[in-house]
Length: 383
Image (cartoon, rainbow, N blue to C red; front, side):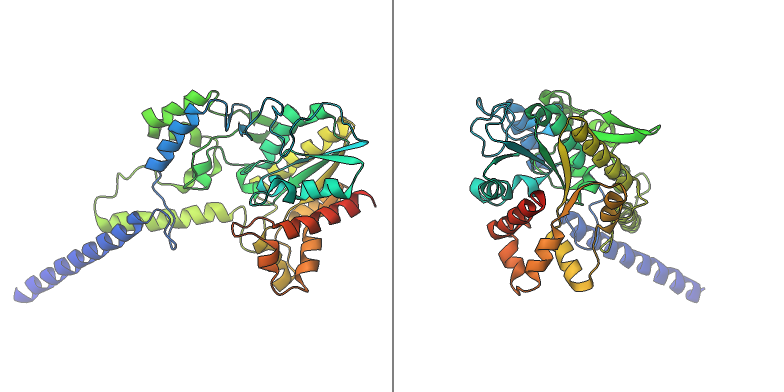
């Protein structure tokens, strides 16, 4: 009897210790919204994100765009927000007009207007003008839509379609914080889906900027609505009905962490983008449609592959191109392509301080790298 009682007490004490330990671990995890070993599996808007929504709705002529999700701030003489363009006419004053579309690497984050590769490309090609339609955080889908909405009317002779391969992940995302958890303000965007052999556009779920009020009034219901067409929605845990004890809470947290990582790694790992993934195939379809539409408008499309610092580093160490699938696909389709990996690897290979010289602290290209890139693009366009 005493032995049985001792066994029961030992089990109870062991269980109590386990629950206390799990409660302590969960306390540490939940205090850190961006834990290193696990993912933030519970989703809710932070106070800063809610404040960002209020500010977004008050700035009615600013960042928000019903068609694109967000846009560069327009001005009376530059209603389309083209970077470093005081006033641009529909018809070019020069012999050739080049327009560039893409994300922050196209826009030129972390450098001044005269330090972007577009500005320096215009200096390299004196008979050309270069219009910068880049925008921070854009996916390939938004770049394509911006060409349709704003770029095509300028009748560019050459269109550089900037593809930073990570855009693949953005192309299956609707609500930015589902993909980048702490984004401020928390913005929504349109996206394409591929159905019955054709692209179909799912418009911005917030048709008016004031529609963002729903995130403040009915957060969980609105997040559920945003998640219907968002690949990353399933990375998060949306109910906790079985989490009655700290042990079960920790178990659920770890299981959702594994699930979330698997969902993300289905698109890209440290070594390669998966060409069989829906996100990769969708990105190819969007780029293909973009390319063909430029050509139908009598322009010359050129795909510009834009590597990040980690992709350059991987190539230098292993000779493995992180986005080789894109290279192969565009080559097979006969698409004109300029791969900036070529010039960056060539310059970095003889420069032991290439990271500091070619990349800013936030990961974007430095003025020196932009000069190399501009010269490289100019040589390709005039070859």
